[in-house]
Image (cartoon, rainbow, N blue to C red):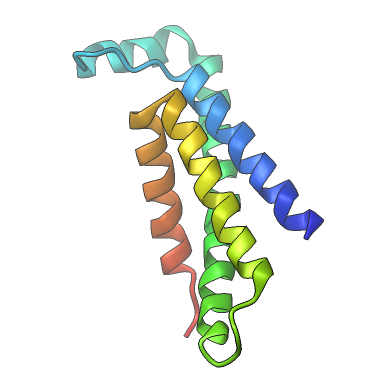
Length: 120
């Protein structure tokens, strides 16, 4: 259980760093977005690494939840499975409050990676 809580903390920290290090202005201008990366390459590299680590951890957690949900159909629903789903949902809500555009991209990539890596 501590491993899952640690994964949720890592996901939140990586998502938070992604939100803080990549600035998206409204209205969105693509040229300004790319110029910011050229001007601050270290910030771009650090945010890319944080995004990569966060997507990997989140995808792994989603993949494990999918496997557990498949097994839970046979057995009774376990309280640990419910707590993991609630924890992931709370991390999503907290990050969504900080930056909705970043969070949607972050979790979309994570869900895509988690679904692709599921073995039947």
